[in-house]
Image (cartoon, rainbow, N blue to C red; front, side):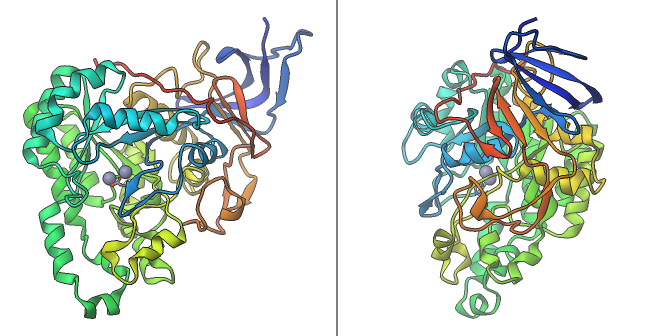
Length: 462
Ligand code: URP
Ligand code: ZN
Ligand code: ZN
């Protein structure tokens, strides 16, 4: 059999388990998996993967690249963001196309297509944000027709003009049920949150607590009351719901209970909620860690890891929304003005592998499941992505199980001048990454090209 590349002698890792073998790539696809695959004198490149793991590349299904937000624009775009992803073993991102002002969903999708075109180094698609239910409802069929069956509503962000109320959530769940769409929800209880922010927004308290007010004004119930409400609307409408960036212990319990009674709800968490906690806010430069929802407590981390093991939390993403120090400095002592979000694409897989697998919080198979196979399945991209099957896209992540690299933002592709995990020693940076058969990382260095990434149209859910 003719191959372009053979990845030889690695440990092939899937959500089902591990096996030793070779993997042959022809064109953009996995052409064969077996023992003793040979180049047969036809010039196939052979990558020696002995002592390495070879797994389906990661998908980060929650990113914001070049997002206008909090009075600035997030610093990673489709150039730096997708290069960073590749170095971290990720070959697919799903961003959010968000309408601004009176824009239609179509305009939002066109805008985001424009951001990605010619720049993306890996494959991509979008969730489409509904920011005005009454005006946007009629566009759902045409957006689904365009290959985007996942929509997002935010329960907060009134000032940005993004907020959805209960009627919008109910309406979207009901309409999408009939159209084969899924609703993603940013669940935080806006009215109570606004009241808590207003109560704390005094010069005296800001002087005393600084960035810690970000976490002090967002007790866990701000998230879990909103999750409970969204789940309730999902149960009533029979819709399909996905809670994004879930960060709380109680939220995880709500999801587990809802799934047990047959409600069609799934939940993702983000890696920062698993490895960082809110003690960061009282440290020097604590404001850099402001993200939304904010970092929580150790108890929440433990419950989220358990949720990953037990299954109620099915995906780990990043919610990448990078801002550099100058942008973060816009807060000038007022926590409500901190651009919210952190970088994450380059370190997602290394962090989950090092902190999760090597510290025995999840298994290797669960790592593949939560960072590759489930994201692909849940977002309608499986088995094209997220699998190691013959005939599927040759999207591969090859890494050494023990070789650790010290995180240093200066040596990374991510476009920021800090890292939330600066100095951490992490295994799991990609030694090689392949996207549709093409090697885009070689010996830890990005070797791909802008414009290689392709839009991935998706079908409605069955
Ligand atoms: O702080 C964050 N996560 N910024 C991005 C917007 C969002 O809520 O996902
Ligand atoms: Zn959000
Ligand atoms: Zn987000």
